[in-house]
Image 1 (cartoon, rainbow, N blue to C red):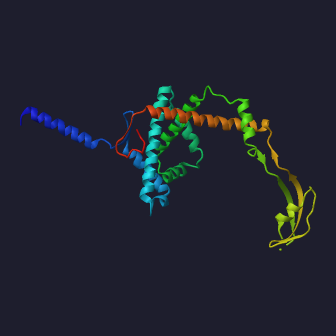
Image 2: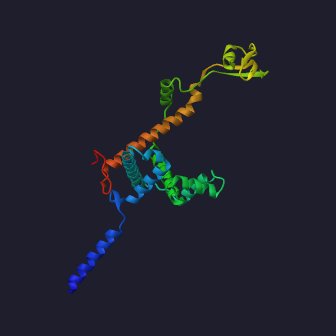
Image 3: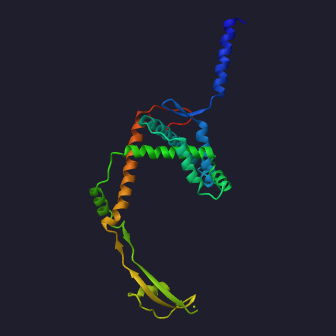
Length: 268
């Protein structure tokens, strides 16, 4: 065989073997490949967690919707990582270790942790990657809202616009003596002042005498009392809105290629 021909055959063989060994790609985000295996792993994990949702009539459609949602989630995760890098935001291994240790502390021992991971279809490595992304999301959000503030006017407006949110319903505290076979709730409702004693009430449990110990009227937190909670609510709203807008901008500027999965309708 001619030397040039042998070189060409060898080159083509390398290309063929490389293509055969390369992992299948689901989607590319700015030239970063998300492997099909990442999609398949999450699909199987969700199916194992809720098998009733993906069996019987409509199972194929349900799985297709699940797969599409997972792909979009993986795209958002990749955009988060790329966008975080552009902001100079990162998460260290030590921070992941600390978060993992806090998670681990919720289990009695290693066996309990292993069982929980098995039920979720996760490895410790996969869990650590999830924790890393959670920390990255938190850091990015903190960066995005660093210059935002919740004003007293914002708090007052929220308080006025949600008149029932900070209301504590009225309640009664009663004591009863059970003699031995009516309606205790009805008897308690008839008592109006602390110290009032009901007539004898017969129920299936026996005979009761009910005494009203305390009646607490419905009340609403004052603006000062509700302000810390309102501030937290508004900060969470700002965080969600800022992150959504930021991610939307990243997605609008990104080059996203659906390779091994169908593109959603309307995808560019």
